[in-house]
Every structure is written in C-alpha cells, then in structure tokens.
Length: 304
Image (cartoon, rainbow, N blue to C red; front, side, top):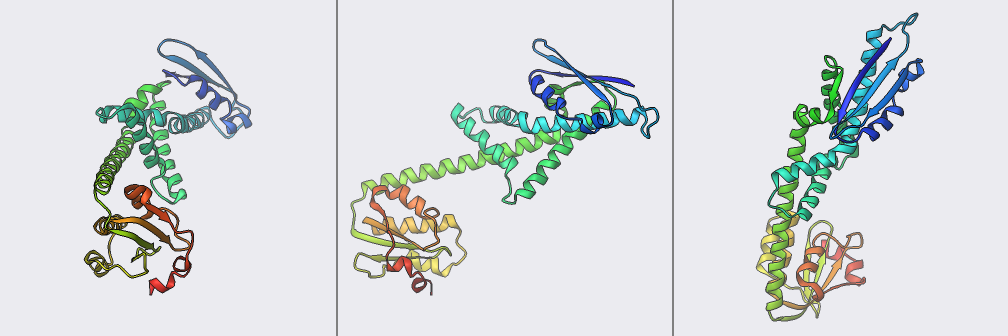
C-alpha cells in the first residue's frame, strides 16, 4: 500500500513536520513507514506526507489503515491549530473588530480573549473539557475534508472552514472587549475620585476602617469612637450588596467623612486585596495598613 497527501500552508511547515515526525505512534508500531517532504514556496509551502506498508495477512484492509492515518493526522493538526495558531487568530479578530484601540490596547485585549477562551472557568477540568470539544470539532472538519480530497490547504480551512471555531473566537473577543471597556470606565472613575479627594480639604484627622471576609465593615475615629453614617444603615438593611457595591459604599463614606489619614484593618485571613485595593487607589498616601492591633487580631468582637 502506498498513499500520499499534501498539505499547503503559508507558515508553520517546520513545526507541523516536527509534530508529524513525533506522532503516528500506532501506525509506526504496526510497521508502516511515513515519509515527509517540504517543498518551500512563496507565499505557500507544501508538505507532502507519504504512507507505505503492507496489510496482507493482517486484520486491517488498506482503507482501514488510510482512515486511521487521516484520523491521526487530523488530531495532530487540530492540536497544532489550538496551541500554535489560536493566539494569532485571536489577534486577527481583535484587529478586525476593535480598530479604534491602540496597538498596545489591542495586544492587551487579545490576551484577555485568550484567557476567556482557555480559562473561562475556575474548574481546570472543565476548561480542558471545553478545549477538547474545540479540538474535536476542528479535527472533525479536517477529517471530513480529507474523506474526499488528498490535498488540504490549511490556511483556507482555518479561515473559511471552521465556522464554529471562529464563532467561539469572536465570542471570546466580545467578552474581553466588554471587560476591557468596563475596567477602563472603572479606572476613569477612580481617577475622577482621586481628583475630587485631592481637591477636598480634610475634615477629620483619622478614620479607621475594618474589613472582614464576609463583606461587613466598621468605622471608628482616632479616639476609638464608632462612626455612624446614613449610608452604613442603608447597607446594613440590604445584605445582598455585591463586591462592587460594597467598594462604592465604603469609598462614598470615606469621601464624605474626608479623613486626613485612613488606617485599614483587615481580618487575619483577609488578603490585602478586595475593597482595600480601590481605597488605596483613591486615597493613595493617606492610607496606612495596620500592622496588627487588638481589633485586627480579635475580629469576632465586630462580627457579632
């Protein structure tokens, strides 16, 4: 048996060749030989793949071996598209749909889209399952083409034959763009608040803010007296506030109280992130982190 097919691609021949030479394990174990030859051209290069061997005396017919060969080839190509072409395809889609962004912003947006596509879930097993689903669809498209053709233009297939895959890429870019715009609006809002704080003269010398893991917070002045505010009462009445709403409430209270110095107290297991981050962004050098006072080390008093 002698069977050959030809791959046409604009770039990546050498990488694909490496994958082929390290693949097709089962066929090699059965005694079949594979030969690969690159014919360089401009702008397209060709990679000729030839399968040789005999099926006489075995349980498989020639057509069975050829099908297995095509299936393994489709698996290798689909893996290469996901691992080595995907970022380039995402950058291309970003360039098409986000022309108003600077090159730096487009690069950042592309990285976000890659993250959405590959790490859309906190469960890594689910991410791998979704990747397998994308790979399976690509592999099926390649195999479907090879059922009736002995030549595969890989660039053409990727650009025009993988509609479902491109739909997922466009969706990831759209999600990344919405996230990018939302973050940009947030940063603009933070800058506005910083400008307002810098222009506002301090009213109180010190405000202490205690943040807990469960989303509650407490305020007291430099003398240890609890600070009361209407916004705090509204927050306590509504226990369903989101993290973003909580940040807005805390910053609104601090802007109203207008302290010269803010001392942040965090519960022992609370990382220096969450609500502490926007407070630091807005009030900058006015913010001090408590190194660990009795109130920080004994948070249960405030949580009951």
